[in-house]
Image (cartoon, rainbow, N blue to C red; front, side, top):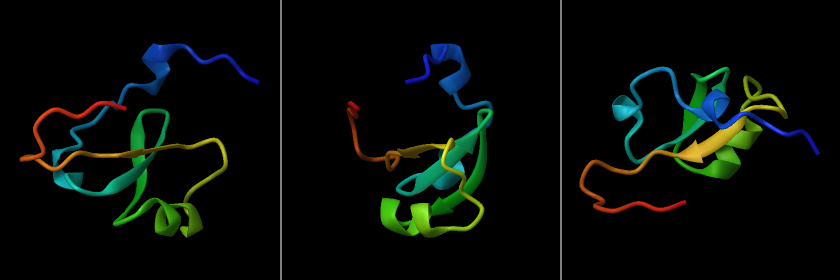
Length: 65
């Protein structure tokens, strides 16, 4: 298992346009987005090493992963 520096996991762009969606990050930048994780994984732009995460909706309040 690879050990990752947590700073490398931080998004390097504003994720507000993706509120309520799932995004795939590569080197901190969005490479794809979708309404759910399954659709995102099925997107050909997404690689095995990409980080997949949900972006909370603006009105969702506290959000813990």
